[in-house]
Length: 122
Image (cartoon, rainbow, N blue to C red; front, side, top):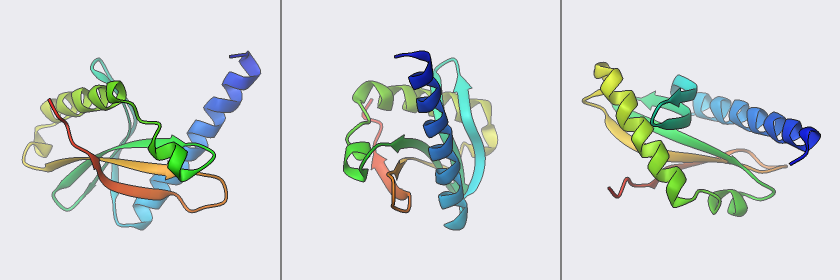
């Protein structure tokens, strides 16, 4: 990827995550962490509502369908490992229900929040 294309992709990703955070906030979620980087992996957004702690992957593509299909098994595993590590480091969340969500961002449409988008199958 050329430098200009890489910069543009990074900018699109940051903008998609910004939109996703606002989408979640408007739905009553509290953002606990964003752009979380841990030794086990990275999580775009960690949000909570009530006793649910959601680890949210944000995908921006030309359509919501393309975005939904772009999360690969290796990414799911990385997010699940990071979630496990995050909860271990933050014991106040130990009793929360952990869930894996996605926010799909596509041009010309409101970001779509897929709750419980997948389960950790380990």
